[in-house]
Image (cartoon, rainbow, N blue to C red; front, side, top):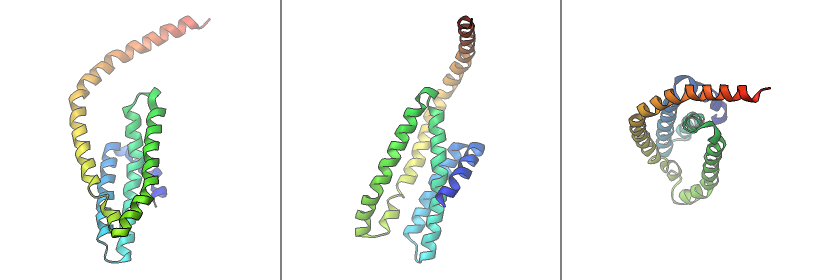
Length: 162
């Protein structure tokens, strides 16, 4: 389910907004984790896992898209490398941590996700507030420097060509 929804979720995130899809994915994943933890029967647990997969499929392409937009083009490989490295560490530590939690109670493997969701939403709100404070200055600088760069490149390309 997760893999089947990655491409459509990425396309929809590009269309409707990556930040919106990231936050909606966090909410869906967190609520589905609660549903899985309190599942009284197997069918409810399976439904919760399907919703978790949909939420995760919304998170992955949105987070990568936001990450690439936040870094200059020359640092994209570094940013993606760090993003993939963190994901690899998280994936490899999931099994041992899950095994320890299941030794106590199987529902804890779902409840461990619950505090992460609200924290992510709070951080997103705080980041948006900081971003808004500096956005006007950044946009003004961008408008001023961008045409100058184009003119500089055009002049230097003309000098290099025979």
